[in-house]
Image (cartoon, rainbow, N blue to C red; front, side):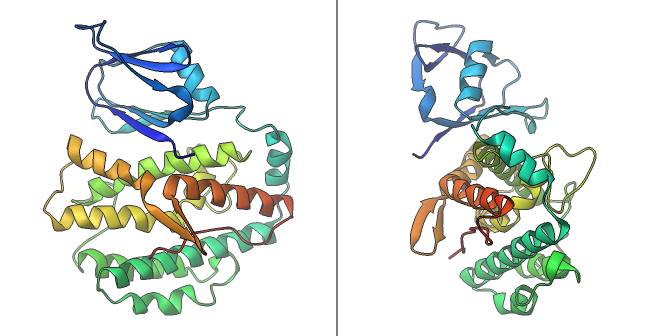
Length: 295
């Protein structure tokens, strides 16, 4: 079932009643709207004066909904995740912890190959020279020992936004749009991983003592070009500021079509395919992670 994404940029009061998220303003408490908790996958709380009750947060967490809290700058700052979202997560955690280095290097090779393939596919879709990346996604070595991901990235960004563009978190636009889109994607990936019994803190390649979700950073890599596609269109239209409208369009990322062989599914659903296949790889019952091919 496709879950809804709710974005609150004005100071609403949010509470729980009869398994429904209740929305109203302080000025008009009798004028209420409701959304079934079971229909919600993501909640973004942007306005600093938004109020939310603890029973509602617990209900959203129990439903494995990702709740994203924004800071004073109205950019994503924190996320609420369920610590008990899968019945077999203890077994899955053990499989993650016990994963061998050869297994993790093999999984990272698959991730890098899928990422560069999708980067090349996006460039071709936009009428650019995606074939430049073909040598980099072919025959990726275990653990990406020769750093094809990094080399391909330099070529990719130059083709996508021009040779003067530098991808950096604090860089000039459209880096701001990319940052926001990637944050939404990261939250969606973390939610899918938790739903499959995996722990986002145990990464495959990304390792940082200050990073709580390195596995999400690993798994999201082949999905980044979907964010890049949305940002490219916004940038081409001259829309480079993070307004309410552009944020709403970046949230549409969760509903973009992704193709797995002959199956076409929204990205949010596709992430569950990827996470479930990764859990099976750790368990030793599957060898390949399921990733979509951008088309």
